[in-house]
Image (cartoon, rainbow, N blue to C red; front, side, top):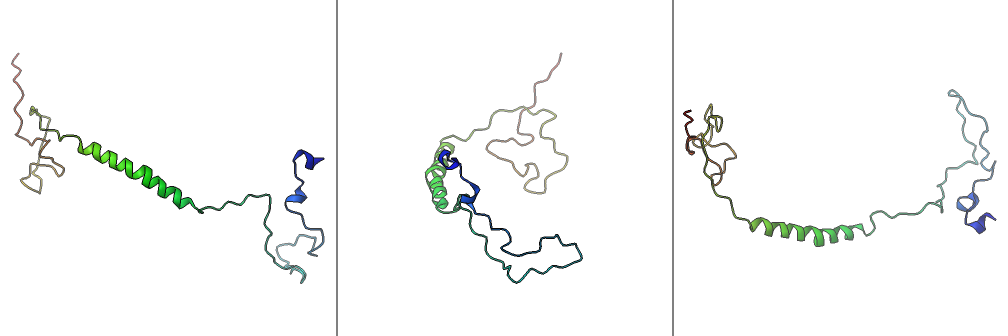
Length: 138
């Protein structure tokens, strides 16, 4: 009746061993006694369970990642490169030199000592390059 419904018995998946086949001792040994296994008990390989599906990890997965790199990764890099080269470099805008901007207590040890390590001459201004703010004489 169970096989008609589609439910398998446990015996069909991995049959249990018959009792008493090994002839091992039925009692639980204490921590001081050493119970050697009988000569009829031999270590054997565990038979595969037919109910557990076999997955072959790594078989053909390199193709998937190869296609992902060639058909998704490289085109995206190419599109972003075209997008980046399509923009113009921004030019320097006019600026006002307020008291709180570009404070320099000591000179930097490179160059003329005014530019920071990450200074971009095409975009950033140096101290003294900007015009002073308008005077507020109210």
